[in-house]
Structures are given as structure tokens and as C-alpha cells.
Image 1 (cartoon, rainbow, N blue to C red):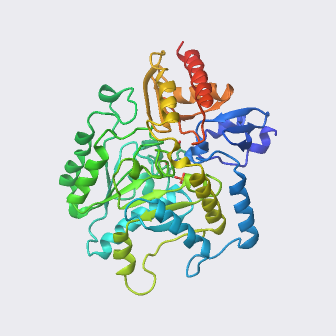
Image 2 (image 1 turned 30 degrees about the vertical axis):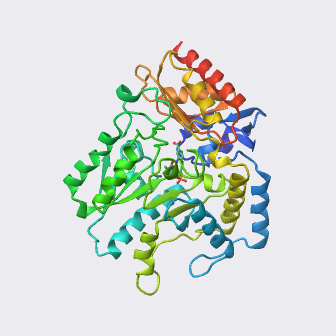
Image 3 (image 1 turned 60 degrees about the vertical axis):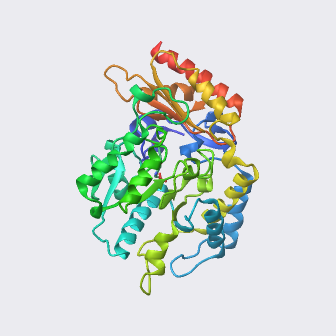
Length: 440
Ligand code: PXG
């Protein structure tokens, strides 16, 4: 492929000019490996973009999508239905914790976040509390790229050119290297104190103005930050005390990433609304799902007036091909016990943890953190090039046959849940070489 032919595609979240002079092309994928255009096999330690939890190229999913395309390619979802979306919803509600029994479909994590924020506003409005319109997000939180998501999100580069168009404030992020560097599993220190910052924000803004708090149970794109012990429970307690909804953005954490179907189960904290996408279809079709508690549905729908109760939805909500992909994906997750395979303290997560923490002491490594099958290694910023080292380590690892995710001065890993020990060995070996090459 000559470089001229790359000109028309404006690529997302990519240094376009850099990519087009040095393209990295993926042409196939199977199990744990990508095939590249120069016929290399590259180990996928990122599950695509945190989404291919069952590994790539599963024939059961491919066949389900193909069969569905031949049977019912599309069905309008406003005022009409198709049986598969109801079947899928029953299955998802059974998998979800507590009273998160109502499922609303979107096409992405970003749309799931917008949907959850609107559900929160609709809930308060329906209960005569329309003044509750402010959202509390968190520094370094990633909630997609639409205007609501970048407002509650806490990654400056994602909103600085676009603004924050919702009334918002943000909790501090939870990374504290002085307290918790090189933690294995949940960081042990400071969780309750960090969550208590929410009390201060409530005093500042007043509970009568606050609709919801939205956090990722484990911060993902902001650097893989497992919550310090006690943090999420404390957030829940404070929200309950002030009639503030708690939204968990489980777009990355959902579908087995933390060793249960959902992180709310792993950490035993039940949100009012939960956003998902990614692993829902194993990345094979675009789809998101928002899980709402029965109380949300009851206030907005059951007790709503006649006619449309929630003025929200997408042309492709509950798209038949995506529903088919999700059903087949759930089959695979269930058959292999895959959703629990990566649990923290289990065989493969412990091996992963051991392997990564063996890199402690290498030059330039300032933190290693992990929970279940999520991990990050963080590097000292290079002089005059803060934020660049992750991409440099990523490039070096890519050349040696392992795909990592670069996040500023860190690399992140979120491998498919089918990962085996030899994949961990390969990754740790190549990481060590790449780090030595850069930091000598
Ligand atoms: N919420 C969370 C927690 C996410 O991680 C989204 C929402 C948005 O999902 P969509 O499907 O709209 O992309 C995400 C997505 C990265 C990276 O930097 C992370 C995501 C997407 C792309 C890249 O590693 N997360």
C-alpha cells in the first residue's frame, strides 16, 4: 500500500502525520495474536482497545453475526422490536448485580455515558428534583468523547479545545506514589480519606444541585488506577446520604476484566446506573448497554406520563447484528468460565502480577500496578519530553512482537482473558528489553 492511499482517512486519537509516514497495519487476528501486513504475528496484550476479552476471531461470534445478517439485517427500535434484544436483555439483567435489571442499548461507550447522564437527570426531574443537574466526575477519568463525557471526564487534552458544557466538578484522582507505589491488587492506603473529598464538593455545591457522581471503578485510559481499599464503598455511602446517584462507568471493567462479570460485583458496591460497551460484543460489533436500577426505571417509565417516557435513543440501539454478536459472546464467556478466569489472586492473575513486578528496580520504572488482568508500568518522564516514554516503549515492544497501550509515561495492559503463562513471559521479557533500551 503506498502512502498516498492513506491520505483520505482522518484517523481518531492518532498522530495522523506520524502514522501515515510509518503505518502499523493489522490485517488479521486470531486468539491472542494479530497478523500484520508484513506477515508478523504480534501478541495482543491490550485486547484491541480493552474490548476483545475472549480473544480474536471466534467462529461462534462470526457465524452468529452472519446468520443474523441473513435473517433480519435491521429493525427499527423506536416503537418496534425484535425478539433477540429482549432475550439479550434478560440475559444481561441476570448477569448484572442487584437491581440493575433494565438495559438500554447504545452503540459505544461514549453513547452509554451520555445515556447514563441523561437517565440521572430524567430520574431527578421525574421526582420533582429538577434542580439536581450538576455532575461530579474525577480527575483522569475517561468517559468517552461526546460533550457530556468530556465534561465529566478529567483528561485535560480531551476537552481543552472543546469546553465543558455540563455543570461539573471533579474529585481528585486516586494515584499517590508516596503512599501506594508498586501496589499489588488494590492500593492499601488512603481510600476513605480520598473519597471523603466528595463531602467537601457537596458542601461547596449543595446536594440539592448534584445529580450524580460518575467514576470508573478502575480508572482505565487515565492510567490504570485501581481504587484504594475502601474508596468506592465510601463514595456509595456519601451518595446515599445526600440523594445523589452513583454511576459506574464499566466500559473497560465490565465483562470479566476484574474477575467477575462487573467490577461492582468484584468490589461489592452497587451503583444506581452502570455503563458498558466493549466486551459486551467482544469488540466484534459496535454496541453499548446501560444498566439502570429498578428505581430509575420506575421513576422515569412506570410513573411517567403516557407516550414516550424517555426522549432518547439511537437509530442503531439494539441493532440485530450487535445483539447477535453479544448473545454469542455471552455463550463463550459462560462456557469457559471466562469472566472469572482473571480474578485477582487466581492462577493467571498472580502469574501476571509476579511477572510484571519482577520489573521493579529496572532503570526508569517508578511504578507497577495491577488488578486482575489490568496493569500498568509507569516510567520516569524523559527530560524535556514528559508524557512521551509510554509511546516509545510501546513502539519498541511492537517491533519485538507485543502490542501494549501507551498512556503518557506509562504502558497499560488488558490482555484477552484467555491469556496463558507463556504470553506473560513473552511480554515481561520484551518489556524488560524495551525499558533497558530506553533508560539503559
Ligand atoms: N468510558 C470508558 C471508561 C472508556 O474506557 C469510553 C467510555 C468510551 O467508549 P467508546 O466506545 O465511545 O470509545 C471508554 C473508551 C485508550 C482508549 O486511551 C480508551 C477507550 C477508548 C479508546 C482508547 O486506551 N475507552
